[in-house]
Length: 272
Length: 255
Image (cartoon, rainbow over all chains, first blue to last red; front, side, top):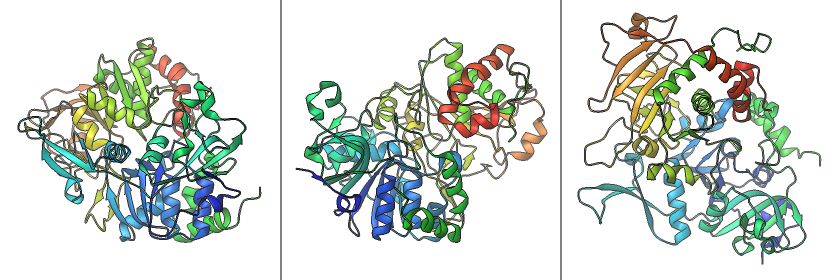
């Protein structure tokens, strides 16, 4: 049975130094409250893998020194410009970057979901990505003739960390149409979830809810984090805090400014 | 950027963004499904304009949108759709774009310690190969961005004949001009120059070689009907995904 954790910190116990941690894309409901808790916990040397891109979450974790290896298709603050801590770390060589392309990450997670060692994907041949990804191979399509195709090894994260609107007490989590959250959970050894609320009843009893529900079977722990995506948005529920994101982009442009940001918004806990 | 909200919505002068969206829509032609990725407000304008003109067709999928996005199978569905040939149009930009149609979204200099780092390749290393009409766009047309050879090929403009590649670039739209791309020759041709810019200026500001015909047209001004659709229909839709952009360009907010 999934643990219904009394605090976010309790739920984050499986996220230890050096693990491979899967993070959702920037618009899928990003567990930002849990991310701040991870930084306070002082987790180090993460292999962070984004499905397939990230924004504030990856930038914060990198800036706070939690990340050793980053596997991603892109990290950017979107309308707020480049992700400053990611950019600085990439230029200084402070983190190792495994550059990918979005569908390659989707395919590699899907391989893990199926329990198969690799997945083929069209494209990529002729891209310099291949030269920097010795783990990606080109084979001849065994069912064709003179048809080279890339194969990608499965990505099996130790822990997927996600946020969703609600869970029930059996640990079933309603993700709606954010289906990549299910892919992350299927592919990962453990999944930790924060939710806006815990509801009575069983989400799998209602066929309308069940289709958008990630079964508790996959879940290690659930904790409540109200407004848990802030300052990012939760699709269908609340939008991003644009003023705050602008403030982040300004402060994080320098190391000193980023330190001030961490002190103000991460280490000094927000008032409940 | 200055807000134009105080101007009369139908008679305000043509904005650069409106001209570029109109150009892109013309280049795309008649299609069934246009998809738009991250950080692409002008291509999103163009896609929504095409849909507004067509009274609901083509299908438009804005990757980051909740409303203008019919996908229900997660982020992978867009790429799965594209791999099958169910997406006709996509847009790519690049920190650098070269004359072979190669795009660089990764960085400049040594890969392990780059002097410039861009966000990353996004979906380019798949979509550029499988989407039949990829429109390149870059609103900074300079020798810094349009270079002889990119430092890092995120996605190449072409491949050897034995590589499965139904898709690729058809055009490059910049703030100064429109280039068409010849896939057989892997070469751009200057197609039209936007009002207020010149052929000589394009030559001065472009770092790669391209074909320049003896006469090059001025890019046509968007029609009054196009401007009406952009300002009254497209702008509020755009504000859902690109609030900053829509507010700055149109003074528009999401409905």
